[in-house]
Image (tube, rainbow, N blue to C red; front, side, top):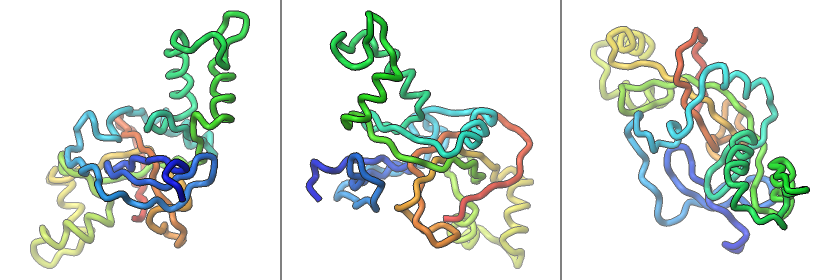
Length: 218
């Protein structure tokens, strides 16, 4: 596939890959030779999950509107509402002869529709979901990552993983965090049903609310 027919995607962990043809369904990406380093700082404001945060109410509203479409503009994936706000803020820089202008008034909806038709923005359908992960205040792990990579190194005695996890949470060595993840079928690791599935964008949920633990099997 010619490079000009591809675009770049930034994964939530900071990796960059090529392989989403414009105007076509997502295909498994091919990793380039040089990758951006994965950030290890949970609180890093430039970490993808912290650039835009959401509340539980906002996260639940996204799930309620499934199926949902994300749009890609200059490297960033965003919801329609976020793209609408971005386009509206830049209306003054858009020439009057361009799409969106009518009788001296700018209509962001019209502009986005036409921009998508000509390939200015990419669009992909996603499944939004809320997941629970764990952190020591610096790193973040899924439950499976804790079980496979952390527990064998830190476990003391004969207690099993669940007992170790429970005591670590009670002691404050670990705490839970929640994220709103937008998942695209067709690339990435296999999910619990054996189908390829990957996270294309995620938002950290910043307020606390009663919830059940929701994990995504990696």
